[in-house]
Every structure is written in C-alpha cells, then in structure tokens.
View 1 (cartoon, one colour):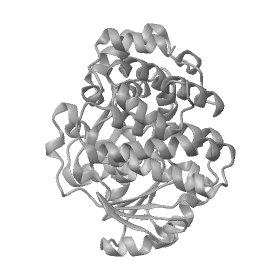
View 2 (cartoon, rainbow, N blue to C red):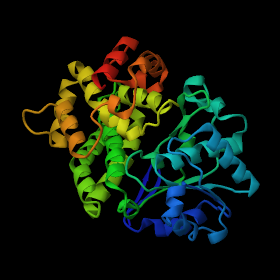
View 3 (cartoon, one colour):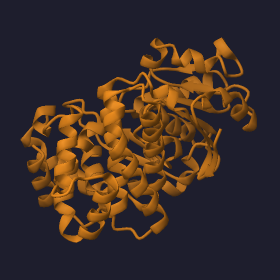
View 4 (tube, rainbow, N blue to C red):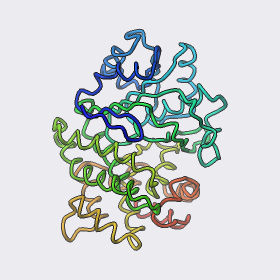
Length: 376
C-alpha cells in the first residue's frame, strides 16, 4: 500500500481504511470522536469505521454535519467532544465532515468562537499546534480536504468564510477509493468538478509556485480524463482511483491559491435563501471565469488544454461547458435558483473572499457582476 509522506502522512489504495487502527495508535488516541453525516450512518459506512476504532460500537459519534458545515454544527460537535472526553477526531465523509472536524479541533483546544480564527478577520495566526489531532477519511473525490489546511464554514450572518492554518492539515489521511465506488453519478459529477476546478484555478493563479503548479496541472489532467468514466461507470476502479488522486492533488496545490470561481462559489454557498452545492457552483461558474482570465493566461490555457485532452478547435471554456452537459451539471445559475437581484451583494462579498487575491487577474465588483450575468 503506497504511503505518501507529503504535507501529512497519507495511506492511498483500495482497502487502505483497514489500517485506521494503526494510524489511531500512531497518534496515541484512546477515545477519538467520529465526525460524519447521517447519510453515511444510514449506509452503514460510519458503523464500519467505528468498528475499527478503540471503543468500537461505543465510539462517540457526531453525525449532524450539514451539507455546508456551519458555525452552529461546529459548536454542537465540540460539545459532544467535551462531553465524552475525546482526545482526537476521525472525520469520515466529503468535505463537509472533514472541514467541520478541523473547526472542532480548533474550538476544543483554543476556546473562543470560530469567528476568532477566520483568515480574513486576522484569525490565522491564532491557530496553534495545540489543535486536536484529526484523521481524515474522504468518501468523495472532490474537496481534497484530507490534505488541506483550511475549512470553509457558513456563519450565522450568512457569510461563508475560511479558517486556514498549516496546523489544520489532518495528522493522517486515509484515501480509499473503494469508499467512492457506490457514490451516485450526480454526486460523482459535482464533487469531481470541484477537484477539476481546483487544478485549473491553482494552475492559472497569480502566485508563482512551480512545484504547486505542477501538482495542479496533473490534478487537472487526471480529473478531466477520468470524471466522465467515473460518472458513467461508477464501478470502474481506475477512474475512481484517479479521481481520488486528483482530489488529493488539487488540495496539495492550494499553496498556489485559488481564484474567482471559488470566491463566488463561497459567497453563493453561504446564502440562506437557497441551498447550493459547492462543486456544482464551481462547474457552472468555471466557463465564465475562464473567459474572464483568458487574455493574460493564454500560454497556461494551452498547456491545460493539452494535458486535459481538449479537442483541437475547442477552447478551454467550451470544453468545460460540453463536459458539464455530458455529466448532468446545470446549465446556469438561474437553473440553480439564483436570482439576479442578489448579484450586487454577491459581487461585493466575493471581493472580500481570500480567493479573490490569487485569481489570475484582479476582478472588480463590476467584473464579478458580469461573470455572474454570463453564468446566469
């Protein structure tokens, strides 16, 4: 089984989850909290993981993770952690349980409120090595949160903000593609487009970091060439392996920064008026943002097109639009329930998102409004 020591210690292979007891022992944990969601409990996946933990069936569990992790859910899970005297966290699920686990790891060791640790509010330096240890087990191939240093959270005021620190990278990551085999096609597509967007946005960001750029390019290559197979034939083991690898690599490339797609998706995902899936938002917004950045990223677009297998005569944004259609993504923000009257507020809030600073070129509120209109 490949053991990857890069950013953190990562087990990556079919069947890797069976080594969970070894990772728990390596961290010296006696009573970790299992953070997951009700869907994985109903499917029996959470029970399978709990059986590998020190207290087995008596493992403390928090399964109230919402599809977009919230400040309120973080506080609930932190209360469970303290009630049962836990000493670490095993996060099982997609990006939401993993991000929630990171936020809990801060609260139970640092005190205060989650807002105290938000990056754009100056909270990054307040996060120390005291964070509770987290073992992350992804069940989707999209966010790469198992190796990421941040957690995107929805706050009570409706804003979607990020806590970021190298100390938040999980101490262990267990990437077992077997856990994605039964992922429904729609969720395979939406999470897969999240991974693909990570690769593309990191590769074309305005930050100079060649090693991260190389990882981002390989992420984009793997995702673009595997997502359709995983969507159409979920049991294809190579496609599932490659998509999980792309997901992990996309988050490894975060050191280079994301861009306007994520700035807008974070803001839209935090709106209380409508529930919007992050990966789906990325898919719908990506073509318009690619067109916005195209005039200063032509050479990088050509490299992406070559690695991603874009047909001759098709532009990168056209390729993404065609791919979206083939894997059942919505055609527009309007189809997803977004209203035009929200655009001014979305544009202004997106300017404050940390991903705006690393976009290929600096957008204005008017630019964001135009991108939203183009994706509408």
